[in-house]
Length: 168
Image (cartoon, rainbow, N blue to C red):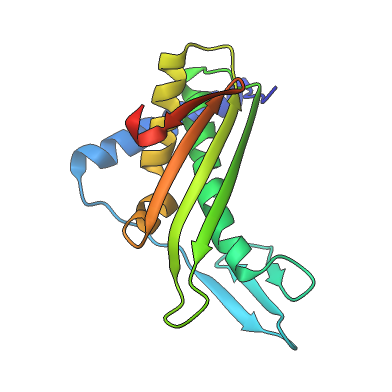
């Protein structure tokens, strides 16, 4: 079971109230920065601004394309945590699989990205449907990629396919 302790729930309620204020104001922006350094052969190392950690990509680890499409799942997981934690929605298990199709010939780009949200929860389908739609619609990565290629999400709840998230 995914746990949300009381401190986390409280922080997420405050965070969601702050985001609600931003939504009411409209057109509020922020920024994120990373620095990528070239290493030997295919190695590159990335460090986020003002953070004490980094991550790398080379021929022995995940490809940059794997990192790229994983950002959709990672970003949505943040929003699942925010919404489930602030609304006391129980998640027993949550996994997102992301599949991307891309052109290998020039110009190189993704043509479609499909993701599959596999969730186990005892909560009502109505609560889960609201959670899933909120996580997708709040996700910066999902919204940005949707402007560039075909992005579709699908929900599998307690082993049952529920369909496309945008059509629930």
